Length: 148
Image (cartoon, rainbow, N blue to C red; front, side, top):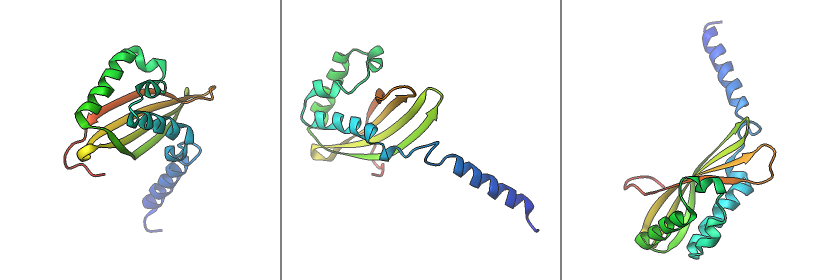
């Protein structure tokens, strides 16, 4: 055998890829509970129904800011960027931890005049629960030159 170290390295990489398969790291795109909660927020924002949007957030989200402060931020972003026209899932990542599954979703929203916002949302699905919780949502202006 000419390259035993290469074979060992290749086998190790295959093992690691197998360990990150569907069971240990599910494809977040295919999880309808996570996608459904994100879609509900964007549909509510498009309709300017802030009560419906806020209803999707877990109470833990509001430990650092009040629901009214978050509503004010959402309304200010809509006023600045214009009405929400569409949204696109750019990336997703799922991670299993001892306390449940964590999902990171990265969206782009498109507003009138092709103005865009970047959304990073953190969802948690605790081990012994049947419901997804939205615990984090960071919104930033889309940077010029970023790819869709």
